[in-house]
Image (cartoon, rainbow, N blue to C red; front, side, top):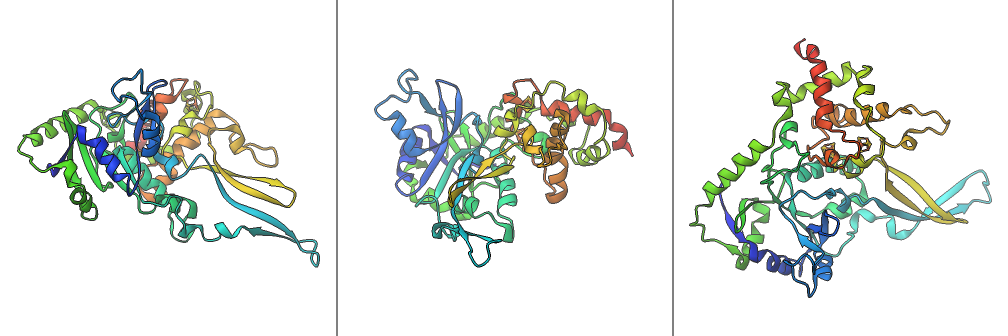
Length: 386
Ligand code: SF4
Ligand code: SF4
């Protein structure tokens, strides 16, 4: 990875300020009072920190944090937890009382051509695992004639400036599922944090104008020996991220076959015994996309909403008849793992787990998806040898 340009740390805030004149900027911000980090719009960050010192945490409750992976995932920027899909009105047809027409509000009939914001988005500081997750969300929501207009209106024209992971969180395992802490292949610009700034190591052709237009913030004097520093950072970060499948001498592509073969194994009950089905793991997951639809209506008009829903919830699986095909926790957990490592792999040749580790970090019962996969595979090595 070759150094292409350099953004000094002291230039980060002025760079964002200047960008925000033309773009909607989002970047990772940590709330120091509760240790929760999430992507925040630049104007909101400015509002929260105005007149306060960035360095003094007792004055400023939030700080930009490009080093750690955010606790919340990027998906809510494009696929919010709750969103109104449209207003509707029910029209009775007196000639045909057995039928009812649903009339949509004009404003939503052509939502695909609308944008939720007036300006293009720039996401600065997205980690490679979240970038991979966005690619998976795209496959689901931007799918030819099944494209989701609401997702499209938020996602289109977004520019991604990624930052590599010099250190990983306790639950991270991207290298075990085909990722890498410095994989910038899906990003427009890729950068690596070094001591005094951010080394720009990837700029794709359609984003090169950013470095030109905002050249006052970038250092073209690259005589410092950053290339060696970058190499050291990459080697040490990759060494720290243990590949749990390699340790067991298991190939990641073998997982779907084992999942099929051992779907009915009683091992699922044993390994999910700790799970309390709280669904926190699915809430924080950047690739979980299940939702439910509900109508808030009054008399003959109303609003239709889409809300995140989770396959770990008992009620998600409950059918109108009262039968629940996944009444037991182990059945729901097995479905979740199969969705990520089997069903979606068969559809798209990609795992729908990017190894971000959020589910490991958040689980109140200490469930660890890495252990679950390892146990299943270790118990079934005989399949792998067939
Ligand atoms: S695995 Fe953990 S976070 Fe997920 S539903 Fe079970 S207890 Fe909750
Ligand atoms: S399953 Fe867990 S590790 Fe995998 S993408 Fe979802 S939250 Fe991240």
